[in-house]
Image 1 (cartoon, rainbow, N blue to C red):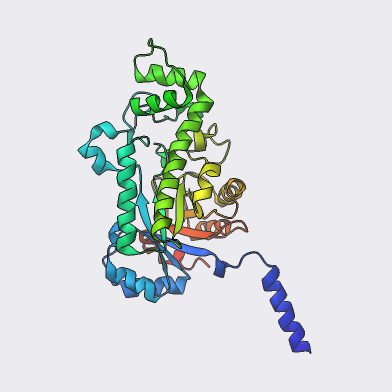
Image 2 (image 1 turned 45 degrees about the vertical axis):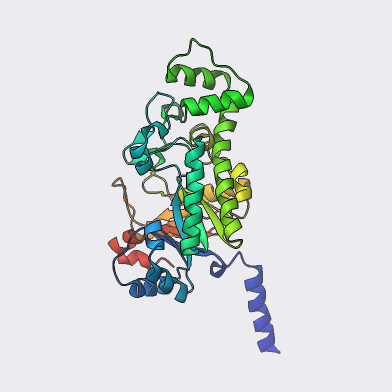
Length: 351
């Protein structure tokens, strides 16, 4: 009788506890790898990693995918959408344009305007072919937003100093036609047109811009699920909460989670705390805030090792971030990225 009572108590503790980490995604991002796949995956199994977020290049490696399958590690292929330097090299007219009249380019970030119909169709077609070729468990949609180099936007940044896009002729024409608005002929330059739109039609233009992003998520998701109904869709999100930098999550990045959520299985804020001069508590707050807009779909991605800036970020700091990412409302955690684990093997012991 006493044994039965103990077993019952254990069962109740498990049943009444928050979602077990066994039911959560423990993922890692990896873009290239030339070593022994079996040895790599063996490490992942020991670490409790159950999902690999891989580049299209790695996804095309049949032997690599086979090792993952043999070890029950799900594959999500990272699929870049509007970040496409190759397309822009071939056709520079595809560039998104900022409110300053400049091309949407900052360091390595180069964005295609999200209103270009032919480009959008080509991306849907490319993703469909990728699914046919690699049969992944999921597709992880990256750079599916308006242009912004968010990795260099720190907490003290003034909202008005962040460039906005897109204000190319394609976007402005589409916007004015959709809402039956008019931009005066006296506005001849892009900065003048952008200034007029933002001072007279800011709410409507924000709705138009977020609509372009959400509709692209929808088009990609519907195509993916038509090919493979069980496939899961993950959307990479800029880690800005409502209110951050003047609602820059929608006003700059163009990511309205309420519009995106119906077509995504997961939404993954890139909570790279050290590079953004944040801490572990901030990660918890991002997950909580985004969960209100997309309940049960938030899958935070966190950085493993210092990057971009020299702010201290030791192994203990990293473990605090892991704990914060695995909060009650989180669907798990995704580590960015495997090469950063190799810089400090001590961080592989995150549990």
